[in-house]
Amino acid sequence: MSIKDNLIAIKNELPEGVTLVAVSKTKPNADILEAYEAGQRVFGENKVQEMTQKWEELPKDIEWHMIGHVQRNKVKYMAEFVSLIHGVDSLKLLKEIDKQADKYDRVIPCLLQMHIAEEDTKFGLDNTELEALLQSEEFKAMKNIKIVGLMGMATFTSDENQVRKEFAHLKSIFNELQQRLPEVTILSMGMSGDYQLAIEEGSTMVRIGSSIFGARNYQ
Image (cartoon, rainbow, N blue to C red; front, side, top):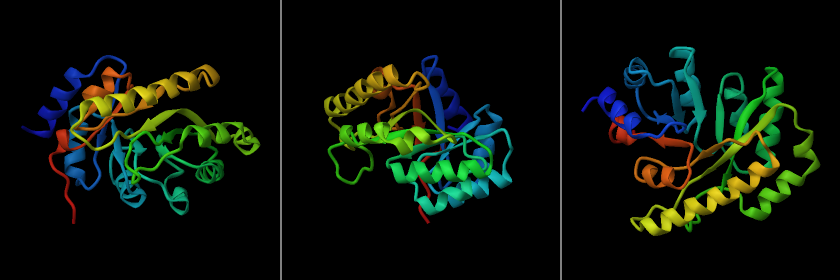
């Protein structure tokens, strides 16, 4: 099946209100343009340099989402154009985004990444760290970032019950956060292997790459 066919098939099964982020990391511009021609406008990258290059070369109405782990020294390269940063996992990173956004007179929407998986390799805040961040005076003083939701990755396992449990846990944190910050509307959870489960547990944004573009190219 073509990229266009894959995209249409996935979009047809997504409920209303769920945003599809087409994960285009490692993919050439031609593949992204094929998805673009089929109506896709939101693309996710995990390397700032690669995303910046694609932003320079591809249509300007594309929304670029940074979905990977962000190093603070790379924020300046994407501050001018990034539409949403998914993986904010520290106050230090948030401060850097705020500082760089100010240079472009922008308010950059961010998702706080929560650690919900049993694997230690995943990044993210725990509940205590989330609370400390939200209560900090530094956070309250920031003018150029906007926390619009949460992101999380479930354990990479074939045990659906465990994945579902982790997604449900993130949804409960999201519900509590919404009571405090009404601008929180995005719950980014679910990838090619588990997005149906994520949607069932309340995800409003899914990050899908290989089911659209085929297997990843690792050079």
